[in-house]
Image (tube, rainbow, N blue to C red; front, side):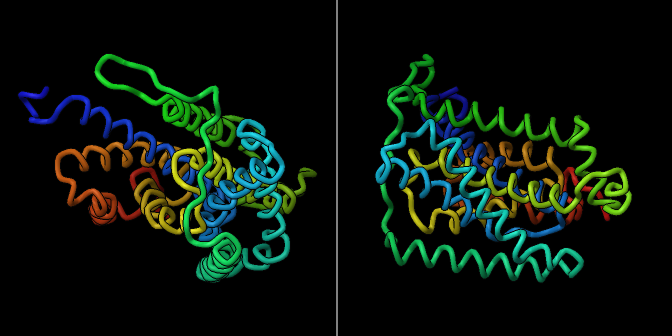
Length: 295
């Protein structure tokens, strides 16, 4: 491989691992966006701020209350998801019958407010969050050394993504959710509380963002800007996969993470823009996205 590509195997596989890690966050965040848009028709620009809130809740639980990483994986998504439900009940539900632009403007403004509050209180510099003891160290795979925590992130993100897809696409609950977006009065006639279902769906999408934030906290420093730096790329991933497509969000998230990692090996100058180049090409060939359907 070294003779063929001129790249040391350790560097190549190291960048592939980095691409998979980035792809894990792209997939989970774009999955939350796809759930919210596909089932609620809301473009949730607050998603990056909610991802950041998940990381900060984990940091506060550890440093203020002494509650560790494993409990934070459950507590932070619940706390931030409850905050999302509050937003949906007080603001977003008034916009469902309006143009998508109104929801985008509202959530964009909320994102700026949330980031401003955290930046004012915590400052702009990042805060460290330690890796849990059980996931410290690494494993020698022969061709590369894989840090245990990064392997954990890739594995758990795959499980969460596949489980979410299965629930939405293959279960009765998922069928109710999809039917509620197409014909709410008919679904409500069967005795299903559609407004409550919509509220919980938004809360679940927000909880996915917060869960991703907890996973990211030990890898990246916890910072008020961590969501803003990521959300534009995640929106590009959602557009490439197809707005509202659950499978598109998962496959495209992981795939673009790997493409980005390989680009850093062979042409580092293009690594920051390769996802947007792919987006432009896909939109030219298939405007609805790779897995999307024309509405």
